[in-house]
Length: 293
Ligand SMILES: N[C@@H](CCC[C@H](N)C(=O)O)C(=O)O
Image (cartoon, rainbow, N blue to C red; front, side, top):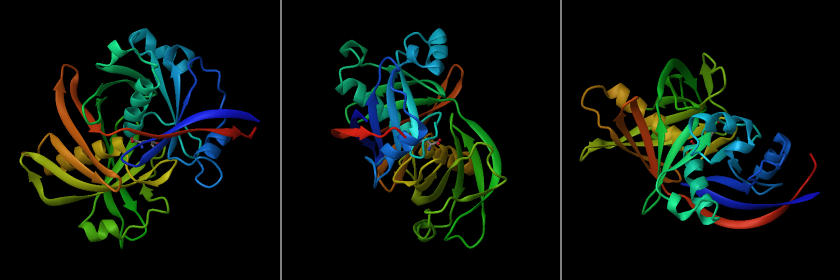
């Protein structure tokens, strides 16, 4: 058995095990990752983030050719041991971790470019949290979404933020609170690579002082229901703006069971980007015996 040092962190209750592996020497299997994320037998988390230098992981080495500044790569794994392209809460926690561990130099504390499987994302440390530019997004197809607690399947809109989402609007808070997300929502048609499924309702009023306000619950691909999903909140805000049409704001406040996140859409030379702002916390450090699974 090996001993693995780890740090536990979260962003609005979406929690992660973080491990440092600068030279890419830690060969964690999917089973070991699922063990570490298990809340009864392991540490417990929604996902695992390996801090690895971009040059030490094949996906990162490819990124470095275009973005030599992206020294660090967020190697993100869901709790079931499957890799994911992006994590909006995880990347804020990851940058906080890099800073606290002294893995990035103080003069690099402006915008930090981070390699991910969904390309390089710029993260900006702020006074009360971090803002990540999630980059370009794409509208996808329509699905019918079935979930326990809903009488009939509802329409859902596919949105790609590097990772896949399907967003469904519900009638009201009673319907949202009545959902049982222990079981995976059904999608028709099925999403080719699976999807994170967001259920959303408007707050009353929907728009206040130029800010759109919605509430969301999520079933994450590879995890189950989580207290928050950063890319999911961006997808939910984008879907609501799309459905609302003219007059919808570019600033959104999204309440999730674990807290509150801010989403903003803004123009860039390459087209519209969407950003996500919110807190990042590190809560404890420890060491665990890692079984050879
Ligand atoms: N919680 C994350 C998303 C993590 C990955 C997701 N489960 C997937 O498989 O795409 C977030 O904050 O964005």
